[in-house]
Length: 252
Image (cartoon, rainbow, N blue to C red):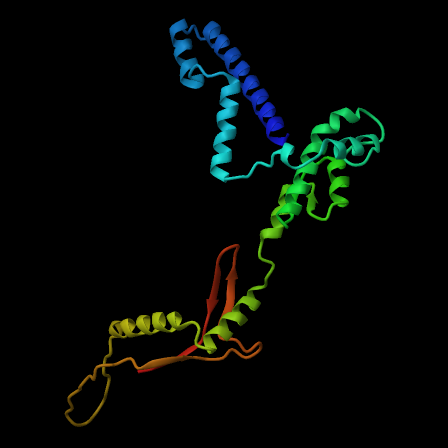
C-alpha cells in the first residue's frame, strides 16, 4: 500500500514538473523568440520522450535497489476478517467518525507491518504525522512510532561520553589489547630521533675536542593521568572521531 501511494505521489510531482517546464518553454518561445526546433531539442534533453509515470517508476525502483529495502506484501500477512473487524469496531487506525473507508490503506499497511515484525521477532520504526498511525502503534508492541524522522535517527547515535571511551581504551591498553598503538608510537619515536640536531657548547681554559655520541631510542611508557586515572584523555569529540592526548616518558 505504501509503495503504491508513494508511486502516485512521485507521478503527481513528475506531472507537475513536466507541466511547469512545458509552460516555461512556451514563454521562452514567445518572449525569447526561440525556434521550434530549439524548444524541441531542450524538451528532449530534459524528458527524453519519457512519460511522468515512467520517470516515477524508474526513480522508485532505483531507490529500492540502492537501499535494498524489503517490501512487505499485504496479501501474505493479513486476513480480511481481521481488517473488517477493526473497521466495524472503529479500532485504530479507523476513526469513530468521518470517512473510515479512506483509512483502509493505512490499516492494511500497519497490520502487515505488525504481522511481519512478529514473524521476524523484531521491531519496526514507524514515522508518520498521522494520529491514527500513532494510536495503532501505541497498542502494538512491535511497532515503535515517531512523528519526526530526526527523532528516530537519534536511536542509532552513540549515547556515550568521551571520557567513557577513553577509560575503556585505557583499560584495554593496560591489559595488552592495543599492541598496535605501542608499535606505532615506537616507530614514530624511533624515526623522530634522527631529526634531532645536537650541538656542544662549552668553555674551558684548556684545549678540548667535542665528540657527539649517536642517540638511540630505547622505549617509552605512558604516564597515568590522575583523576580519573586514565592514559588517554579526550580533547575533541565529534560524530565519528575522537582525538585524545597522552603524557609519556621516553628513554634514549
